[in-house]
Image (tube, rainbow, N blue to C red):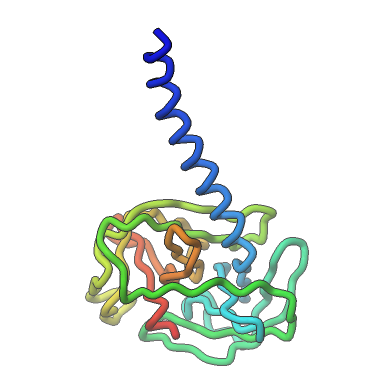
Length: 197
């Protein structure tokens, strides 16, 4: 009887350990996630470095010149310093210096089946939204997406809800490996961080 109970507890302990680790990972990565609010759209952004540079998706900006970024109860103005409509990437800059940059991974070393986590916080809530999944193709191509062809993007089965655009796709260490851009054909699509750089 004791052995049977022990066998039942071990899987539960593994599940609890996994749950706690995932929750801790979300909490850690969320320090580098900001909301991005343009005149016509809401999305997410990721703090890249201590100089106040933030990356998001170009389509989140909706042709605006300035946007507001938020984290916690605070909001800041950010300037658009660069856009790449073809790869759906935009670079923002804020003068606020207390934002926490995300740790960078290497998207050239991704493998199919690798566990990933996608985060978003378009409405600047106390806790971000998160989904999990695996990489289904680390080097995919999309034809006809927003009128263009997107080459060398990451495909995952992590669902991306509205507002996930511009948010980070991270590995099990919490390192950013991509910027989430869309959810098409039941796949989450992310631009590899090496391409973003």
